[in-house]
Image 1 (spheres, rainbow, N blue to C red):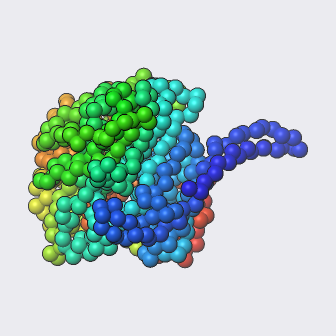
Image 2 (cartoon, helix red, strand yellow):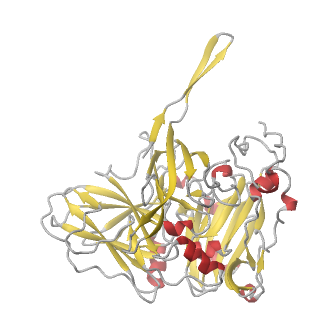
Length: 554
């Protein structure tokens, strides 16, 4: 992997004298070549998407406040974008890497992302947002370590491992896209991968990870799959949950964890068992046929193969809901700054707006589409953020085409295909309710923010259901699942100006319209609230030849 670190120092000179010295946060530089390559993760050769020849892609190992610069060369035969899921891009939605904010990188060209992991810690992922590229690879882990001066609520582990689990299709991304374009949904996956592989159990498998006896290790477990929730467990070992999507958690122990698509957990595992091989196991949840994948963890002084007895996965979604209720924010731990995580009392802030989002499936001209409040999002040729910035939004999309409170039978109404953008007042404290009337589990993500996941409950939401909210120590995170015939509620302050994507983490649902954008405009047009458009921004659509608007000022 090509990267290097630069510490930059700014010397401020006035009247011939040095008036101050300010050390900038370190820079990490990466050059990524994105190419096709033949991979066979399930034993069937297929076209994969590689980054610098790697599948999965390289890990980004950063520290709070690092500046990350990634120059991506697109050597595919179609446009390409990557998003950095969970990175908040404060004041900087220009780097978000989704089609509502960025023009995709054309074949044979490059684009350099520049963003800062400002005031963040934790475990994240990146993946492609164009077409069905996520089903071919191009994904990887992105970790943000705490600064050395900030105490972490557990002892330093012996090592720190990234575990990317996900369902997998042996058909190519282009074939899967043709299925969806023709109006079909995706069938069940062909397999489950752990870091792009699965153990065959024939005694010839190489270990994915090694552990020294008596030592404790950190595993960052992320679901990078297409559509399927997975249960993760390690044979014979308990896992202590310590972090979830950027927040330190109360350190409960678990035999297994349900990891829904797009989610990341960090656990501590101690090598305190008989020295031999053990399987880490990922198996599908809420599927008629359970698909199980294994990877080997080897004790360094191990003298035996892993037992063929695989620990069973839980059954039903009530178990998963009850597990969610055990997740708690560690109020006393420091986050990216030295102040305690619980110093922000979200439960005492008055809600200024409630938005209820109901997902649905239906057919438009005989073809399958997914919708939010009756609107199935389509990406215009001009990214909506660019249209806003250049003052031509009215030519590209309309704001607020969906109501904050949809009709009770919205899923029965005709689906409309158009850009779906909600206008949100800067700095308002908002309640968003995700209501799922379908029989399948939903996994939602919001770019640009973390939010407080205050409740997931069966049934339909009413204002009286606020009595069940956790207003003290709900985990601050960026994804939330909604079980069948259930609802989930989140609370957040929209204090990060920009155009931000709310999407289903199911790639099939996102591709077929289950996503939308929230436009958070600062009326001041000030650099205090949002950065200017970067000089290297790719332009497309109707803004390509327009003069650049006056820059923001202080």
